[in-house]
Image (cartoon, rainbow, N blue to C red):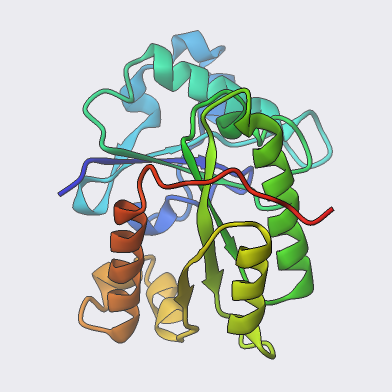
Length: 231
């Protein structure tokens, strides 16, 4: 199997909880606040190992209404690099906020940390609007750095003509719809038990969809494009 590191870049700090079977992981920012500074932390303080030996880190963010949440992402990635978190890792997944409104969240894109971006969206208007906005961000940094758009992943919301809309948007952006993930209640059932679908119901159709998605992303490595967002 591949060695995987997940870096949650969302102030909600909920990217890793199903892998760790926990409410929420202690974030780098909150641990740094308790310890006095980031320099006082060790890698094992912030990195937890979960299901299938997936390594998990949450960057965290400040209290709502105070400070810049994007700073947490910057602080965290710098800490991880300095402490060798990326050694012997095949895949690093940065789970970033979809509505990238500030530069901090765009850090994995901006600083050449991420090579390929997959935008998870649905057929709803605002989700498609956000996907186009993220594409604008990728375009902005694609020429100076190596970041590329890997494709769109549609997480079905069961809205009208969802598949057609997702495919049409992908075409407009010059990319592909990598996968259409159908909606299934097994996802909620797994979440209630703090598990991923692959662990909770490995034989389910939904688990197969996620396996297929992973294979598609793996096979798509290095084939990303510079997007052509709608102005």
